[in-house]
Each structure stands twice: as structure tokens, then as C-alpha cells.
Amino acid sequence: YKLLHPELDSMLQRLSLIVRDNRPLLRIGLPQSIFYHLFPTVLVHFRERHPTVEVQAYERDTMLAELVKDGSLDICISERYFGDPDVPQHQIREYRLSLIYPKAWGESPNIEEISSWLTDRPFVTYEPGQTLRNASANFLSEIGLEPEVAISTSGGSSVKRCVENGLGYSIIPDWCIDPNEPKIKSIHISSIPKVKIYFGHSKFLSQNIYVKNLHQICTEVLGGDLTNVNDRKNIFTLPL
Image (cartoon, rainbow, N blue to C red; front, side, top):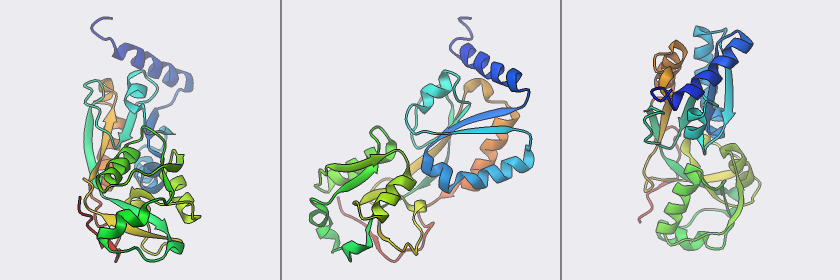
């Protein structure tokens, strides 16, 4: 037991689910925006290879490492590197962030006026503890803004929906934004370091055929740099 701990409990919980359902199962935790915008394509390819495997997706951002370690999840796709040997992680992609705001606010000012332009405007962001909320807060602080959060929610699509309805501005992944958005405008921010996406899993599942194949598909479908995923005209480099 000492040799296997802490993986034994995770193994036993997974085994009980497989025995109960008598079919292969993968439990995957990942942020809501990644699932909504990127993951369906991955699932199409995975289902072609393994049509009998049940996939349970849990839309989470925080606590993913702990959920894998305690046996609640088999796989995590996260924008956070845990540095935990019991949850091996592999980088599969990176991307840039963009500031979005309602079109009703008009054209954005010159780069040097962005900070004063956003002062006292409502800020919409992710719930506390999420990676993208922390990245947004760091960037805004560096350009001299300490905004009060008007609305926070758990998913990127919900954040974007709030901005579309004029409730404030936000900072979200580039790949969440269509170049022909009817209700919002975006400012590409190259000053924020690229955000990485990692594929992680329970250590004892390293040789599991379904985990290995899903990792391969994620690398092939999601891999690469998303900096230029959309061809937008309004691309600024904000000086820090």
C-alpha cells in the first residue's frame, strides 16, 4: 500500500466505475471555453477510433490536479502547469489573449490612452482562481488599472455573452473571437505572454490506449500556435 499510495485510491475508484458500467470510460476535466470552442473536433476523431468509449466531460478550471489525484478524473486539459509528478502534463498548444468590448463604445483610442479609456468602465471576467482571470488582472495592473470586477463567471462563452450585451469589457482567448463579431470589438494583446494548454493524466494511466490516443489526437488537432487564428485588423501591442 505504501508503494502504491497515493495512486491506489484513484485506481480503485476508476476500476469500480468500469466494473459497474461494463464499458470503457474516460473522465476529462477542462475549462468550459476549451470544451465549447475546441474540443468537439477532438471528440469527432476520438469517436472514429473508439466508438464504444464513454466520455464524461467536466467543465472545470480550478482543482483539476486534485481531481485527477483523488480519482475523480482520468485526464485534465488545463492552462495551468501543476508540476506534480502524479499528474504528468504535456504541452499541446499556446495562444494569445485579446481585450474585447461592446461595439457601442465606439472606436478604441490610441494605444497610450487605453488605460485611461478603460478607467471606471465595468470589467467582466472569470471566477476567482481561474488562470485567465489571473493573467488579465496582471496585465491590467501593469498598465496602471485596478478595475473592480462587475461580473465574474466560470466560462469564456458566458464572459463573452456578457460583453455582447454591453455589460463591460473583458480579456479572453483569441480563438473565442470571430473576426466578424456583430456586437463586440477586439484588441489583440501581444504584451501578455502566450497562454499554454497542457494535456495531463493520472500517472498510472500513462500506457492506457485510450489516454495515449486522446493525447495524440489533441496534439494533432489542437497543437500549434494560435496567435494568428483570426485575421483581425485591430491588432495592438500595448507597451508595459
